[in-house]
Image (cartoon, rainbow over all chains, first blue to last red; front, side, top):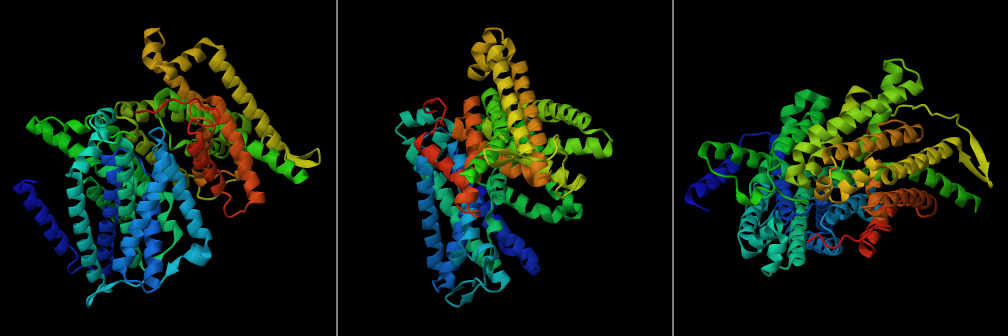
Length: 323
Length: 292
């Protein structure tokens, strides 16, 4: 990262620290859910943008993370242990789901995850003894850290922000490590990557499992934010929403999902005056964006920038991410 | 035993409608690598064209159905191909997936906002009676569904393998480059595929709406079942989609009676996962070999 970008990132973090000051509870809530969905979308970006696999179960992993965290914290386990447990669970489920799906043709993970997200919804709704059924779980406590109580909305925001920055740093490190380069290599040209000694299946599986674990972490943050969870919050529709975040922002770009999550979360607030037409306008916008520029908003921005500077489009995205 | 027979028969009737949607889905995939996530909405929409024809324009049922069929061919066939899929083809499958998801939401919301959010009664072509079939009660609607969809499938199969145009379409699906060298107008063949898909969706819509009523949210379960049917049967085969559709219809019905109503929706999904594990090319599909 060069120094200009470093300054931009520091300014961004400073803006995130200053953003909630003087705002009401609702605005802070919207900011929190932006950060949380950014984490889930970053995880999906690893699966989709870097390893080139479509997962339609990111919200289901959020659900598993949220229910695990909620059940553990309500049983008296501290969040700091509950959240990693949720992530490990999602990681393992990711491995179990991905192993057979990645054995066969490339688009199968999409269908397996599609089925999995519906199954998760059914289990969450029907197993009342564990999940509370369609009534959900109520009264999830927000964690305390050495006297720092996250109960006030502003405190919870800073807690979420800290987790977000930590995850973003680790993610940045991951995608710039040899692993991250291997992920990209198998998206761009799997045969060549394979010939250079990258174990395609193992790396794809790993990317999917890590992505799923990040979904679990997002769920672990979402449960104490809302303090109430029920199955519809993690349905297939929300998985599609997270997928849209990644693609609209720009899959395969580090900041793409963060931008995309911002748009998907904040847009309803701006389009509130349109009332029932909101989803229609939104869907139409996505449709047009996909037709005009399939690399998402960041790709669109780069396209304009390169026209002025005369620079070519990033080579690894010329072909577009493939299913 | 009577109950079993009854459940299987009505499962076959619903399954044959699923098969229509699944076949359209498979055809689109073969011809243009389009995974149409809006397929369920494609089946939901034509019923509303019929309702508009009848209640807004005052047409009789048959005229309204023809009106709806033509509208479907134009909107879900030509417009969908020219303005949604074609510009995205060079960018691979992912943008198409996203765009069809968005299109599905758009169609659903448009119907909800501009027609109605309530389930609409939909006229059937036959008087609603039940017939006795070896002790099992079968409704006339079920028989109509089974007969019409089987006729459509047979006609389609005949068209694809018995006519020159149909064989050109198959060639285009199997190997577009070679087909073009041999003088097949690929673009036109792909357009035909989209038109056939639109027509299949319209027929499925006319048949299923009298049972489930016409509702904006009908598409989601139908789309999911069409997927599952296509994969279970074999993604690269029309026969596969047919068998898959019938199988899912029957399994779904049996599960509702003999497993549990709560987990009814889970049974086809479990079937899907088992098939992917054991026989990834589908029941009737041919292995394509690893893509990489």
